[in-house]
Length: 139
Ligand SMILES: C[S@@+](CC[C@H](N)C(=O)[O-])C[C@H]1O[C@@H](n2cnc3c(N)ncnc32)[C@H](O)[C@@H]1O
Image 1 (tube, rainbow, N blue to C red):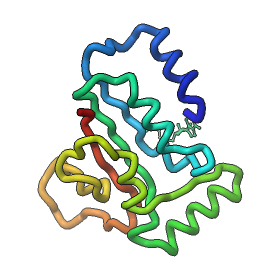
Image 2: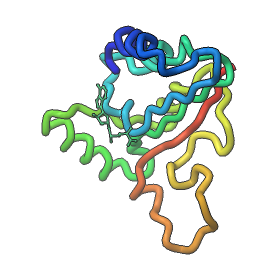
Image 3: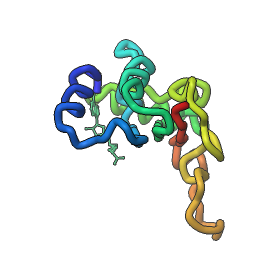
Image 4: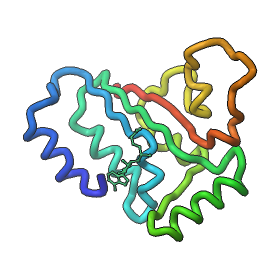
């Protein structure tokens, strides 16, 4: 994904996707592996570029927002083990959706994004989940 030109040409060459129809771009639990020197925001713009209006971007992304001590420690363990990560704040993750229409309920903790059933008291906390989720629609 750090070579989005090669990625998109492979996708186009495969002729699996119909670029005349809306396409869902799912980047779940991926972009926190792409640190700022790789310009993750430019990568996402490049991946969205050939998609027609009405296409959707779905992202979930680790964040330290709800429990900085724990999640900064998780990031440190990943990085020191050879897998660099960059967990981002709500405002930084929101930037992936710039220029898109973010649909309800917006960018929120993952388990709060359209939960399948009513709350039954067994839900995890935001601090335990540590993931932001959102879906944006291309104009
Ligand atoms: C936590 S998994 C999520 C997998 C899948 N998106 C899902 O929701 O089940 C993270 C994935 O990111 C992939 N990944 C990490 N760095 C990557 C990179 N630079 N390019 C492409 N994939 C990468 C890993 O191989 C792994 O499959």
